[in-house]
Length: 373
Image (cartoon, rainbow, N blue to C red; front, side, top):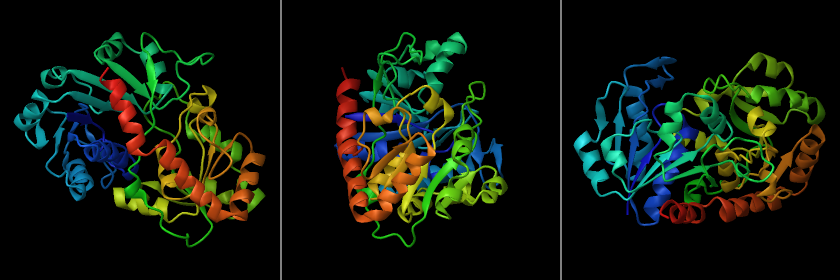
Protein backbone atom coordinates (compact mmCIF):
# COMPACT_ATOMS: atom_id res chain seq x y z
CA UNK A 1 0.00 0.00 0.00
CA UNK A 2 1.19 3.53 -0.73
CA UNK A 3 0.91 5.87 2.25
CA UNK A 4 1.47 9.63 2.24
CA UNK A 5 2.66 10.95 5.63
CA UNK A 6 2.59 14.68 6.41
CA UNK A 7 4.76 15.96 9.25
CA UNK A 8 6.59 19.01 10.61
CA UNK A 9 10.27 18.06 10.44
CA UNK A 10 11.33 21.36 8.81
CA UNK A 11 8.86 23.65 10.57
CA UNK A 12 10.25 22.59 13.95
CA UNK A 13 13.74 21.33 13.01
CA UNK A 14 14.72 19.46 16.15
CA UNK A 15 15.63 15.87 16.85
CA UNK A 16 12.56 14.85 18.82
CA UNK A 17 10.17 16.16 16.17
CA UNK A 18 12.24 14.51 13.44
CA UNK A 19 11.97 11.13 15.17
CA UNK A 20 8.20 11.46 15.54
CA UNK A 21 7.69 11.62 11.77
CA UNK A 22 10.52 9.34 10.75
CA UNK A 23 9.38 6.49 12.99
CA UNK A 24 6.01 6.48 11.22
CA UNK A 25 7.84 6.29 7.90
CA UNK A 26 10.28 3.61 9.03
CA UNK A 27 7.65 1.58 10.82
CA UNK A 28 5.25 1.62 7.88
CA UNK A 29 8.02 0.70 5.46
CA UNK A 30 9.05 -2.23 7.67
CA UNK A 31 5.47 -3.48 7.43
CA UNK A 32 5.85 -3.59 3.63
CA UNK A 33 4.27 -0.27 2.65
CA UNK A 34 5.66 2.38 0.30
CA UNK A 35 5.86 5.80 1.97
CA UNK A 36 6.38 9.39 0.91
CA UNK A 37 6.85 12.31 3.33
CA UNK A 38 5.26 15.69 2.63
CA UNK A 39 5.35 18.94 4.57
CA UNK A 40 2.84 21.58 3.51
CA UNK A 41 1.94 23.82 6.46
CA UNK A 42 1.87 27.19 4.68
CA UNK A 43 4.29 28.50 7.32
CA UNK A 44 7.90 29.58 7.19
CA UNK A 45 10.47 27.35 8.85
CA UNK A 46 12.36 28.11 12.05
CA UNK A 47 16.10 28.48 11.49
CA UNK A 48 17.87 27.75 14.82
CA UNK A 49 21.23 28.99 13.53
CA UNK A 50 19.84 32.44 12.78
CA UNK A 51 17.31 32.04 15.62
CA UNK A 52 14.51 33.38 13.48
CA UNK A 53 11.51 32.38 11.41
CA UNK A 54 12.91 32.40 7.90
CA UNK A 55 11.39 32.74 4.45
CA UNK A 56 14.39 30.81 3.13
CA UNK A 57 13.66 27.09 3.65
CA UNK A 58 17.30 26.01 3.19
CA UNK A 59 17.89 25.00 6.80
CA UNK A 60 14.66 23.03 6.97
CA UNK A 61 15.34 21.29 3.68
CA UNK A 62 18.79 20.22 4.82
CA UNK A 63 17.30 18.99 8.10
CA UNK A 64 14.67 16.85 6.35
CA UNK A 65 17.31 15.35 4.09
CA UNK A 66 19.72 14.69 6.98
CA UNK A 67 16.90 13.02 8.91
CA UNK A 68 15.58 10.77 6.14
CA UNK A 69 18.53 10.01 3.84
CA UNK A 70 20.43 7.81 6.33
CA UNK A 71 17.36 5.57 6.40
CA UNK A 72 17.12 5.25 2.62
CA UNK A 73 14.35 7.86 2.33
CA UNK A 74 16.38 10.70 0.83
CA UNK A 75 14.34 10.57 -2.38
CA UNK A 76 10.98 10.09 -0.70
CA UNK A 77 10.08 13.57 0.51
CA UNK A 78 8.58 16.82 -0.71
CA UNK A 79 8.52 20.16 1.08
CA UNK A 80 6.08 22.86 -0.02
CA UNK A 81 7.33 26.27 1.06
CA UNK A 82 4.99 29.02 2.28
CA UNK A 83 5.22 30.64 -1.17
CA UNK A 84 4.02 27.51 -2.95
CA UNK A 85 7.39 26.39 -4.29
CA UNK A 86 8.20 22.68 -4.15
CA UNK A 87 11.49 21.27 -2.87
CA UNK A 88 12.94 17.78 -2.59
CA UNK A 89 10.89 15.68 -4.99
CA UNK A 90 8.93 17.92 -7.40
CA UNK A 91 5.18 18.40 -7.40
CA UNK A 92 4.76 16.01 -10.35
CA UNK A 93 6.43 13.21 -8.36
CA UNK A 94 4.21 13.93 -5.34
CA UNK A 95 1.08 13.97 -7.48
CA UNK A 96 2.04 10.69 -9.10
CA UNK A 97 2.52 9.08 -5.68
CA UNK A 98 -0.83 10.41 -4.45
CA UNK A 99 -2.64 9.20 -7.58
CA UNK A 100 -2.61 5.60 -6.39
CA UNK A 101 -1.96 6.10 -2.66
CA UNK A 102 -4.55 4.48 -0.40
CA UNK A 103 -3.96 6.37 2.85
CA UNK A 104 -3.03 9.92 3.86
CA UNK A 105 -1.74 10.32 7.44
CA UNK A 106 -1.60 13.93 8.60
CA UNK A 107 0.60 14.00 11.69
CA UNK A 108 0.42 17.08 13.90
CA UNK A 109 -0.79 19.38 11.12
CA UNK A 110 1.94 18.47 8.63
CA UNK A 111 -0.42 19.89 6.01
CA UNK A 112 -3.12 22.53 6.48
CA UNK A 113 -4.25 22.31 2.88
CA UNK A 114 -6.66 20.06 1.03
CA UNK A 115 -4.88 20.10 -2.31
CA UNK A 116 -6.62 17.98 -4.93
CA UNK A 117 -3.89 15.34 -4.81
CA UNK A 118 -4.40 14.84 -1.05
CA UNK A 119 -8.18 14.97 -1.20
CA UNK A 120 -8.34 12.22 -3.83
CA UNK A 121 -6.60 9.69 -1.59
CA UNK A 122 -9.36 7.27 -0.51
CA UNK A 123 -8.70 7.25 3.25
CA UNK A 124 -7.48 10.24 5.23
CA UNK A 125 -6.66 10.43 8.96
CA UNK A 126 -5.35 13.06 11.35
CA UNK A 127 -3.10 12.19 14.30
CA UNK A 128 -3.25 14.69 17.16
CA UNK A 129 -0.05 14.85 19.21
CA UNK A 130 -1.29 17.75 21.38
CA UNK A 131 -4.37 16.33 23.12
CA UNK A 132 -6.67 18.81 24.85
CA UNK A 133 -4.97 21.72 23.06
CA UNK A 134 -6.28 20.48 19.71
CA UNK A 135 -9.79 19.76 20.94
CA UNK A 136 -10.11 23.08 22.79
CA UNK A 137 -8.88 24.90 19.69
CA UNK A 138 -11.50 23.17 17.56
CA UNK A 139 -14.19 24.21 20.03
CA UNK A 140 -13.12 27.86 20.26
CA UNK A 141 -11.44 28.90 17.02
CA UNK A 142 -12.93 29.86 13.67
CA UNK A 143 -15.30 27.61 11.72
CA UNK A 144 -12.70 27.10 8.97
CA UNK A 145 -10.63 24.95 11.33
CA UNK A 146 -13.61 22.71 12.07
CA UNK A 147 -14.36 22.53 8.35
CA UNK A 148 -10.80 21.35 7.72
CA UNK A 149 -11.21 18.47 10.15
CA UNK A 150 -14.52 17.29 8.72
CA UNK A 151 -12.72 15.93 5.65
CA UNK A 152 -10.81 13.28 7.60
CA UNK A 153 -12.31 9.82 7.75
CA UNK A 154 -10.90 9.27 11.25
CA UNK A 155 -9.13 11.39 13.84
CA UNK A 156 -6.63 9.87 16.28
CA UNK A 157 -5.09 11.34 19.42
CA UNK A 158 -2.29 10.61 21.87
CA UNK A 159 -4.75 11.51 24.64
CA UNK A 160 -5.89 8.14 25.97
CA UNK A 161 -8.77 9.61 27.99
CA UNK A 162 -10.30 11.91 25.38
CA UNK A 163 -13.90 10.93 24.70
CA UNK A 164 -14.07 8.56 27.66
CA UNK A 165 -16.79 8.78 30.32
CA UNK A 166 -16.14 11.55 32.81
CA UNK A 167 -13.50 13.36 30.78
CA UNK A 168 -14.52 16.95 30.05
CA UNK A 169 -12.26 17.72 27.07
CA UNK A 170 -14.65 18.80 24.27
CA UNK A 171 -14.82 16.34 21.39
CA UNK A 172 -17.22 18.19 19.12
CA UNK A 173 -18.57 16.11 16.27
CA UNK A 174 -15.57 13.78 16.29
CA UNK A 175 -14.94 10.34 17.69
CA UNK A 176 -11.32 10.57 18.77
CA UNK A 177 -9.55 7.20 18.53
CA UNK A 178 -6.55 6.60 20.75
CA UNK A 179 -3.09 5.71 19.47
CA UNK A 180 0.46 5.95 20.81
CA UNK A 181 3.49 7.33 19.04
CA UNK A 182 5.16 4.30 17.37
CA UNK A 183 8.78 3.56 18.27
CA UNK A 184 11.11 1.65 15.98
CA UNK A 185 12.87 -0.42 18.61
CA UNK A 186 15.91 -1.21 16.46
CA UNK A 187 16.67 2.52 16.32
CA UNK A 188 16.71 2.79 20.13
CA UNK A 189 18.69 -0.23 21.25
CA UNK A 190 19.91 -0.02 24.87
CA UNK A 191 23.36 1.53 25.16
CA UNK A 192 24.65 -0.44 28.16
CA UNK A 193 25.34 1.05 31.57
CA UNK A 194 25.22 4.86 31.74
CA UNK A 195 28.36 6.78 32.63
CA UNK A 196 26.73 8.44 35.66
CA UNK A 197 23.47 8.46 37.62
CA UNK A 198 21.94 11.64 36.27
CA UNK A 199 18.27 11.96 35.42
CA UNK A 200 17.73 13.99 32.26
CA UNK A 201 15.00 15.26 29.99
CA UNK A 202 14.58 17.55 26.99
CA UNK A 203 11.94 20.22 27.51
CA UNK A 204 10.54 23.56 26.43
CA UNK A 205 9.60 25.79 29.34
CA UNK A 206 6.80 27.55 27.48
CA UNK A 207 5.53 26.93 23.93
CA UNK A 208 4.46 29.68 21.54
CA UNK A 209 1.64 27.74 19.91
CA UNK A 210 -1.80 27.58 21.55
CA UNK A 211 -0.96 30.85 23.33
CA UNK A 212 -4.64 31.57 23.97
CA UNK A 213 -4.94 28.29 25.90
CA UNK A 214 -1.73 28.50 27.93
CA UNK A 215 -1.12 25.57 30.23
CA UNK A 216 2.62 25.09 29.75
CA UNK A 217 5.30 23.09 31.57
CA UNK A 218 6.45 26.07 33.62
CA UNK A 219 3.28 25.85 35.73
CA UNK A 220 3.91 22.23 36.65
CA UNK A 221 7.68 22.48 37.03
CA UNK A 222 7.37 25.14 39.70
CA UNK A 223 5.68 22.51 41.87
CA UNK A 224 8.87 20.41 41.89
CA UNK A 225 11.50 23.12 41.50
CA UNK A 226 12.98 22.36 44.94
CA UNK A 227 13.46 18.66 44.17
CA UNK A 228 17.31 18.89 44.14
CA UNK A 229 17.12 20.12 47.74
CA UNK A 230 15.46 16.80 48.60
CA UNK A 231 17.62 14.35 46.62
CA UNK A 232 20.78 16.23 45.69
CA UNK A 233 22.51 17.00 42.40
CA UNK A 234 20.96 14.28 40.23
CA UNK A 235 19.48 16.20 37.30
CA UNK A 236 20.53 17.63 33.94
CA UNK A 237 17.80 19.44 32.05
CA UNK A 238 18.15 20.14 28.36
CA UNK A 239 15.80 23.09 28.55
CA UNK A 240 14.66 26.05 26.51
CA UNK A 241 13.91 28.19 29.53
CA UNK A 242 15.23 30.17 32.53
CA UNK A 243 18.64 28.55 33.09
CA UNK A 244 19.69 30.98 35.84
CA UNK A 245 16.56 30.36 37.90
CA UNK A 246 16.83 26.60 37.55
CA UNK A 247 20.54 26.51 38.34
CA UNK A 248 19.95 28.60 41.48
CA UNK A 249 17.65 25.80 42.70
CA UNK A 250 20.21 23.06 42.10
CA UNK A 251 19.32 21.90 38.56
CA UNK A 252 22.12 21.50 36.05
CA UNK A 253 21.01 22.75 32.64
CA UNK A 254 22.16 22.60 29.04
CA UNK A 255 20.73 24.19 25.93
CA UNK A 256 17.81 22.14 24.62
CA UNK A 257 18.26 23.42 21.08
CA UNK A 258 21.89 22.32 20.99
CA UNK A 259 21.05 18.85 22.30
CA UNK A 260 18.17 18.52 19.83
CA UNK A 261 19.80 20.02 16.74
CA UNK A 262 19.91 16.65 14.96
CA UNK A 263 18.04 13.38 15.25
CA UNK A 264 21.27 11.56 16.11
CA UNK A 265 22.28 14.10 18.74
CA UNK A 266 18.90 13.87 20.41
CA UNK A 267 19.06 10.07 20.44
CA UNK A 268 22.56 10.01 21.92
CA UNK A 269 21.52 12.39 24.72
CA UNK A 270 18.64 10.09 25.63
CA UNK A 271 20.65 6.87 25.39
CA UNK A 272 23.52 8.29 27.48
CA UNK A 273 21.17 9.12 30.36
CA UNK A 274 20.63 7.14 33.55
CA UNK A 275 16.87 7.71 33.48
CA UNK A 276 14.32 10.38 32.64
CA UNK A 277 12.63 12.79 34.98
CA UNK A 278 9.93 14.81 33.22
CA UNK A 279 6.97 17.05 33.91
CA UNK A 280 3.99 17.52 31.60
CA UNK A 281 2.27 20.62 30.30
CA UNK A 282 -0.30 21.93 32.73
CA UNK A 283 -3.14 21.44 30.25
CA UNK A 284 -2.30 17.75 29.89
CA UNK A 285 -2.35 17.37 33.67
CA UNK A 286 -5.38 19.50 34.53
CA UNK A 287 -7.61 17.90 31.88
CA UNK A 288 -6.50 14.33 32.68
CA UNK A 289 -5.98 13.91 28.95
CA UNK A 290 -4.06 10.64 29.18
CA UNK A 291 -1.18 12.09 27.14
CA UNK A 292 2.12 10.22 27.27
CA UNK A 293 5.34 11.65 25.89
CA UNK A 294 6.93 10.32 22.71
CA UNK A 295 10.23 11.38 24.30
CA UNK A 296 9.58 9.15 27.31
CA UNK A 297 8.82 6.28 24.95
CA UNK A 298 12.32 6.71 23.51
CA UNK A 299 13.88 6.63 26.98
CA UNK A 300 12.02 3.42 27.75
CA UNK A 301 12.96 1.86 24.41
CA UNK A 302 16.60 2.68 25.21
CA UNK A 303 16.36 0.73 28.45
CA UNK A 304 16.25 3.91 30.53
CA UNK A 305 13.71 4.05 33.37
CA UNK A 306 11.44 7.07 33.54
CA UNK A 307 9.73 9.11 36.25
CA UNK A 308 7.04 11.24 34.63
CA UNK A 309 4.04 13.20 35.78
CA UNK A 310 0.57 11.73 35.89
CA UNK A 311 -1.80 12.98 33.19
CA UNK A 312 -4.19 10.03 33.25
CA UNK A 313 -1.79 7.75 31.34
CA UNK A 314 -1.46 5.64 34.47
CA UNK A 315 -4.85 4.09 33.75
CA UNK A 316 -3.48 2.66 30.49
CA UNK A 317 0.17 1.81 31.10
CA UNK A 318 2.02 -0.15 33.80
CA UNK A 319 3.64 1.86 36.58
CA UNK A 320 5.98 0.93 39.40
CA UNK A 321 8.73 -0.92 37.57
CA UNK A 322 10.76 0.77 34.84
CA UNK A 323 8.11 3.46 34.50
CA UNK A 324 6.96 5.55 37.48
CA UNK A 325 4.27 8.21 37.67
CA UNK A 326 4.11 11.07 40.15
CA UNK A 327 1.66 13.61 41.43
CA UNK A 328 3.69 14.97 44.32
CA UNK A 329 7.29 15.29 45.46
CA UNK A 330 7.23 12.23 47.71
CA UNK A 331 6.32 10.07 44.69
CA UNK A 332 9.46 11.24 42.89
CA UNK A 333 11.73 10.62 45.86
CA UNK A 334 10.35 7.09 46.29
CA UNK A 335 10.79 6.36 42.57
CA UNK A 336 14.42 7.53 42.59
CA UNK A 337 15.14 5.31 45.57
CA UNK A 338 13.53 2.32 43.83
CA UNK A 339 15.52 2.83 40.61
CA UNK A 340 18.80 3.26 42.50
CA UNK A 341 18.13 0.09 44.52
CA UNK A 342 17.84 -2.18 41.45
CA UNK A 343 18.77 -0.30 38.31
CA UNK A 344 19.25 -3.37 36.13
CA UNK A 345 15.72 -4.63 36.81
CA UNK A 346 14.12 -1.25 36.10
CA UNK A 347 16.19 -0.74 32.95
CA UNK A 348 15.11 -4.14 31.65
CA UNK A 349 11.49 -3.46 32.54
CA UNK A 350 11.61 -0.09 30.74
CA UNK A 351 12.55 -1.79 27.49
CA UNK A 352 9.84 -4.42 28.01
CA UNK A 353 7.18 -1.72 28.44
CA UNK A 354 8.31 -0.03 25.24
CA UNK A 355 8.17 -3.33 23.35
CA UNK A 356 4.72 -4.22 24.66
CA UNK A 357 3.02 -0.85 24.19
CA UNK A 358 4.93 1.40 21.77
CA UNK A 359 6.70 -0.86 19.29
CA UNK A 360 5.82 0.26 15.75
CA UNK A 361 4.98 -3.36 14.98
CA UNK A 362 2.28 -3.16 17.66
CA UNK A 363 1.02 0.41 17.21
CA UNK A 364 0.89 0.74 13.43
CA UNK A 365 -1.10 -2.39 12.49
CA UNK A 366 -3.81 -1.27 14.91
CA UNK A 367 -3.73 2.25 13.49
CA UNK A 368 -3.98 1.00 9.90
CA UNK A 369 -6.80 -1.44 10.65
CA UNK A 370 -8.92 1.37 12.08
CA UNK A 371 -7.83 3.96 9.51
CA UNK A 372 -9.00 1.78 6.61
CA UNK A 373 -12.44 0.97 8.00
